[in-house]
Image 1 (spheres, rainbow, N blue to C red):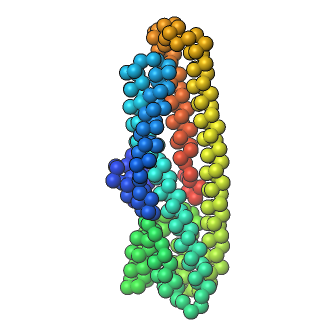
Image 2 (tube, rainbow, N blue to C red):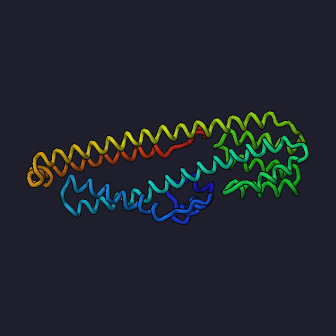
Length: 271
C-alpha cells in the first residue's frame, strides 16, 4: 500500500483493495455515484448551454471519466487513509491502557494489541512481532526503523513507535511519554473530524453556487424562449465560444475545489 500513496492514479484492483482493507468493499451505488451522476450532471449542463445532443454526450462522457478516474479514487483513498489513521489511534490507546496491567509484559501487551488491529497496520505489526520474538537487538531496532519510515507522515504515531522501541530494547516500563503521545494523537483525530465537517459545509456552499449559476442560465434561456435562445446564442459561433469558455472556467473551479476538498492531511509534516 505504500506505493499507492505516491501515485495519482490507481488500477481498479488497487481501488478495490483499499476499499476492502477495512471491510468496506465498493458497492453498486458507488459506481452510480461516481460514473452515472457525473455523466448526467456534465451532460445536462452541456446540453443546457449548447442544445446539441452530441455535445451533451461528449460532456457526459468527460464527466464519467472524471468521476471514475478522479472523484472515486480520491474518495476511496481518503476513506482508506482515514480508517488507517483511526486504526493507528486505536492501537495507541490499547497499548497505553494495557501497559497499566503489571501482570503483562511489554511483548505480551504488544502481541495482544496486534491481535486487535485490522487492515494494513495489522500486517505490519505481525511482521514486527515476529522480529521481536526471535530477532536480535539490532534486528529489532531495524524493524522499528522500517515501520517508522512507513508511517513517518503520522508524526505522533512515529514518535510512539520510537518510544516503544526504546522501551523494548532498554527494558523500560515507564508509560508517561507513551500516554502523552497517545493524548496528542487523540487530539489529531478530533481536529481532523472538525476539519472534515468544515469542508462539508464549504462543499454545500460550492454546490449552491453551481446551482445558482445553472438557474441563472435557465432563467435567461426561458426569458428569451428556448427557440430564440438557441438561434440567437446557443448555436452561434459567439455563443459556442462563450459557453465553452464558461464551461472551462466552471470545470477549473470545480476541479480546484475537489483537490482541496479531498486533502484531509493533518498528521503530515510537509516540506
